[in-house]
Structures are given as structure tokens and as C-alpha cells.
Image (cartoon, rainbow, N blue to C red; front, top):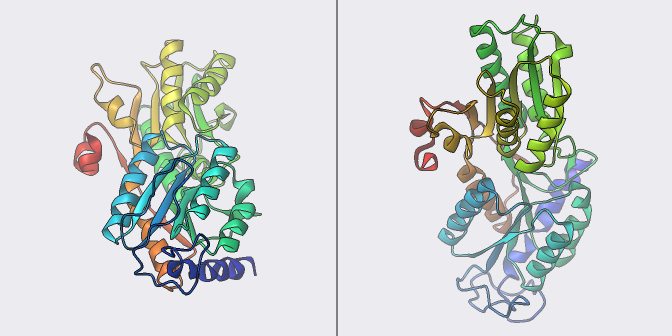
Length: 351
């Protein structure tokens, strides 16, 4: 029933395509989609609509992170190619800033919103605001959901399978380097247990690693929970490393690139990086680790395209605006890259 309601919500939200460019200060279902009138400006005073389709907002929880910058660039291009203006907003991991951005989008008669919410417990409130305003919304990366059920169309990564890819790579590394049976070897999973899209990543990593390395002592598998930032990832990893001086060789993977790089820095500070192996998730920071003179203990990373998620979220939004019934879930797969192949696989994103 909840999934049915979610689809019903996305279809109901199709109405604003005809209201986005109304010259009235409130949405008007009778206004044609081809209207060229500009929406009311935001509080800053600058009108946002310069194209015929209206304004699409991209509101991202951590807009200063490389992933969201790349995703936003791809969303902007896709929106502009379709005749819309795109407004990128960094919510700064702040629920208050995020809700302010949502209110600005509504005040400006947005044609639609793609968003990564900073706190998923706010999902229902945001969906209700969008429904009341008649503005379609598509979630990117982190779903708009209630009790684990998506309440709006979602575009993101195939989290569990990507976790499995990391788990497989690091398991093979452990076997190839005869690390499985050693008592001074530990596996550290950097987790983000409060973010639904991140939980399956860690589950996939754990499940595949233990499947391929059944003789690895699970008492030497540790978790460090953090908030998605490099600083908090560093702090969380350092706490586990310090608490277990018996572990001399660390295998690390995690929920996002920032946390894994934070673990790299923690291992370097502890003087344990020479024998460590860290596998990132995203590769947008791993590429810089790969380029370091003398190398880095980040040996690999699961690469998935921010461009695919950014452009994909706009395409789903355009489908809703156009009256189509979108899939409730659109997932992107990944490939593990290393210093040997990342340039070929990542193309311009390896620069």
C-alpha cells in the first residue's frame, strides 16, 4: 500500500509542469508549460528563470563535497538541455538550511526539485510540502522514505551490490597476500547507520568478505560509525585503531569516499599505513590518492558515476513533469578501480 501511495504521490506531483512559469505569485494549473514568464525571485532578489521550461532546483545535503558538485553539474546540464534553468543549493548538512531551500523553491514556483535530504526523518514533511505546493520531487542518493518505504521516486547507487564489489575486492586482496589467518590483521568497516542508502553498502561489504574469507575471525571485524565527512571518518577510525593495538595490518572499506579517506589519514597518523589496504566508495577522492608520489594505502575504490545519478534524477523528474509514471527506484552499478585502470574507467572524472 505504501508503494502504491508513493507512486500516486509522484503522479499527483505532475501538475506543476503547467504552473512553473505562471506570472501569478502562486501556482496556477492553467498556465501553459511553454510560458516564458519569470518566477518570483528568491530573497536574494535575483530572478532565477531565464529559460522557457522554468526553474528546477537541485538541493543537496552536502553541496561542498565533490560527489554532489559533480552530480549537480550533470543535473544542471540535463536540465538546461531540456530548456530549464537549474538552481544548485548546498544545504550544508543543516536541516534548517535545507527546509529554507525547499521553501525558496516553492516560493519561486519551481518546475520541480531533485534533492538529497540531510535527515531522512524529515522525509514526510518535505513530501507534504511538495504535494501541497503541487511541485514534483525526486530524491537522489538518499531516499525520501518513511519506515523504509520510499514515498517519492529515487535515483541512486545500487548500494548492496556496490558493497559486495568492495567486499569481493578486499577479500581477494586478503587471500592473495596471505592475510586471512593472521591474528594481527583486522577488517574495519566505516559505517553510516543513520542513512538508509549507506546501510546496504556495509552489509554487502561484510556479507561478501565473510563469504569469500570464511576462515577470517569475525571478532577481528570492527565498525566505525561516522556522519559522512572526512573529519568524522578520521576521528571514528582513529578511535578503533587506537583501541586495538594488537591489529598491525588493517583492511578498510566503508560507506563513502570521505570516510575511507578519513581512515587513510588515521592510519598514516598511527604509522600503520605501509601495510594497510583501504578500498574507497565513489573514487572521486581515491583518484587523488592514486596520484600521490610514493603511493597511498588506498589501493582501490568502487567507482560509480555522479553524472549518471545527476542526469538520471533530472530524467526521472522530467518524466513526472511530462505526465509519465516513473519507476520508484532507479539504481546505478559500479566498477572497482585501481591505480592501474582508473584513468581508463573514469575518463574525465579521473582528472
